[in-house]
Length: 215
Image (cartoon, rainbow, N blue to C red; front, top):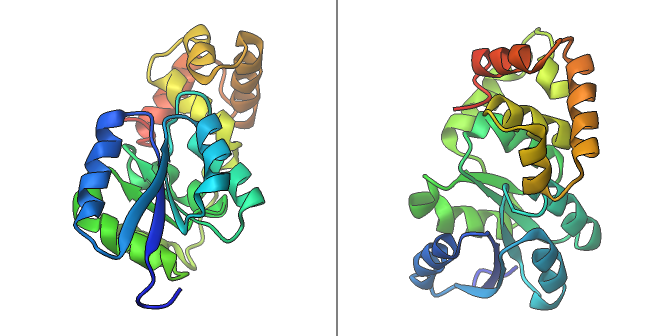
């Protein structure tokens, strides 16, 4: 993009008040316009094809599917699109997974009011965007000799199931929230318990708390 180009942004978030807040922030920047929006993953994938956008703001917790799943599908169809993940979760929970899945950056919603415009301009220019705190954490990790945490061996969906179970949600509630069958969620639970060498949900919850995977 040239320095004078207008950056077209697409917003995918299931909360109308969040979308409106993001649009108000971006309205103050003459070089950025919101060209489309969606409230769930299916609509996001459908409408991004027509929006001709440069940057997609994608909530990591959509009601019908995970944001990382949507990210992978969008990047498969539109590899040139810069996707900036938005999340209520701390960076150390999902940022690395998002970047590995193809995101151009990761931004917590708490920091969005002060960092959003800078982040959009940066990823629109072909660069990656992470906060200074996360950049320092990544730099510190380079060259360290340590074992990979067990939760890093999980698939994105298994990791999501782990955090939801650890937050006190039942398999049935998780299945309903993710629009999946109880059998599917039970399979995710079984697989992640095996991978993490845990016996039950109580041990899983203890692990998640100890490793600060949930608030």
